[in-house]
Amino acid sequence: MIFENDRTLHIILNSLFKKYQENVTDVKKITNALIEKGVVKEQAEIVNDHIAFRTLGVEHLGIKSFEKIFLKHGYTQQDAYYFEAKKLDANWYAPLSPIYPRVFISELRVHELSTEAQNIIKKYTKDITDDPLNSIDLDNGEAVGHFLHSPLWETPTKEEYGILLKESEYAAWVIYNRYYLNHYTISVHALPKGYNMLVEFNQFLESIGVALNTAGGKIKTSKDGLLLQSSSVSALKEATFACGNTEEISGSYVEFAERRILPEFRHLPISEIEPKHRREGFETGNADKIFESTYTKQTKRK
Picture 1: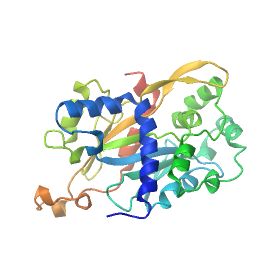
Picture 2: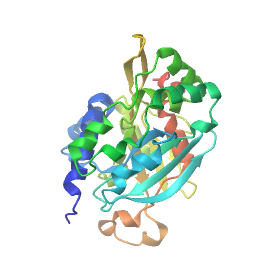
Picture 3: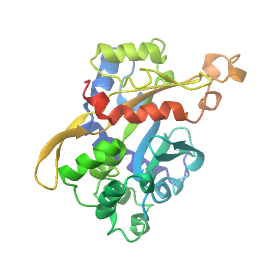
C-alpha cells in the first residue's frame, strides 16, 4: 500500500538513520553479527519498533513543535507519560502504516529545574523567537533531514554542561546533542526463532561485546508482562565545547523490544500473528530506566 507521504517520510527516516549508525558503533556491530549468523541478510530486514527524540520544554520548542514533523506525515498521537523524578513529559505516536516505526518524543520540564539550570538553558535558547518548524517545508524530506542535524543554538561551555549534568543528565544531553536521534529499536519478536525472545537476544548481544543498561535490571518488564525492553549503554563521543575543551560524553544507543502476543490472540497460529495482535504502546516504568542508557552511572561501567 502506498501513502501520499511515503517518499518524504522515507527520506526523513533514512537521513536520521544514516547519521545515527555512523556514530553509534553498536548498530553495525549488531547488524553484522546477525548477518554472519544468518539471522538476517541485511539491515533492511530488521524491524524498527520505534525511534526516540529528546527536547526541551521552553517556548517555541518541545513536543508541540517537534511532533509537527510526524503529524504531517500521518502519525497520530497516542498515550502521554510523566516521569516525576526525571522531570519529563512524553508522548508516543503511531504511524499510518506498520511498515514505519513508532515515534517517542520526550520533553524536559525546564521550569522545574533550579534557577541556575534554567538560566543556562534560557541563555542558549533565548534567540529562538518562533517555532523553527514554521519555516521548514515539512513536505521536503531533505529539508527536514537537514534541520534535524543542524544546531538550533550555540555549543555550550564545558562548565555549563557540567552544571546541567549534575542536576539533570537529560538536560546536559540535549543542550549538547540537540535533536540528534536518541535511539532506534530492534523488534526482537520479529526475528527468527532463537533470537526472537529478549532473554536470548541479550545473551547474543553480550556475546558480541554489547554492554547493556542495567538500570532496573537488564530487562525492563511492563506490569502486564507483555512488553520487555533492554538497551545498550550509550556510545561515548568526544565533544568539543565552546571554550575549546574536549571531553567524552554520552551520545546515542540502541534499544531492543519484545512485544508479546495479547492473551486474546494466543490461539492464533504464529503465521497469522500481525503487529495488531501484540502489546502496543509503552510503559512508564520501562522507559524511565531506558532513559538512563545515557547516564554516567551506566557509561562509566562500559
